[in-house]
Image 1 (cartoon, one colour):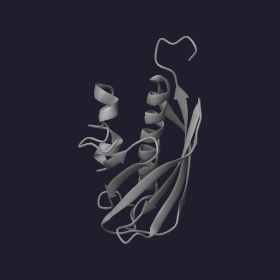
Image 2 (tube, rainbow, N blue to C red):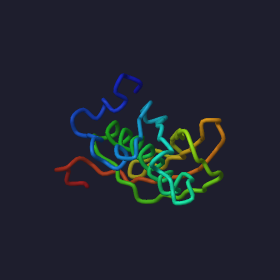
Image 3 (spheres, one colour):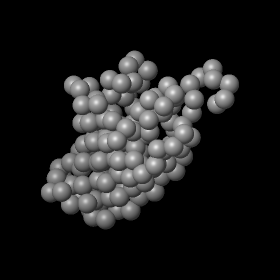
Image 4 (cartoon, one colour):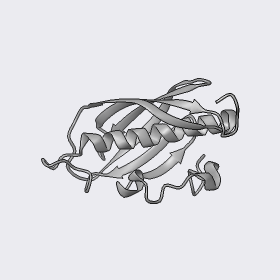
Length: 145
């Protein structure tokens, strides 16, 4: 979905205001099951050495992968998704600017969705590679949850 609000598919059921991604300055640029793109500033998300905090990269990766998995669950049966595993390899330090994450699905199943997330700096260099797996849950009230 590439409307003015890339999260419009969720309607009023999801709000990012006041959440961790909001506090970290993450902006969603594009959101569909096949591709989720977001940008996060380095400033305010650093560790004591002045480098982008690895945990911040993981928050960006989990945010993007979770949105893709949630869109998949919504499309599949109106359900939701919850992250159950994340891993990340940090390739390069970043001190300024912003980083961009792109999440693409590795596997979209009936009960699990896994996304590959590549995070790059303003120059296009890879900063982090992450993988997120989410479990898909059926809508509330469904006896098969």
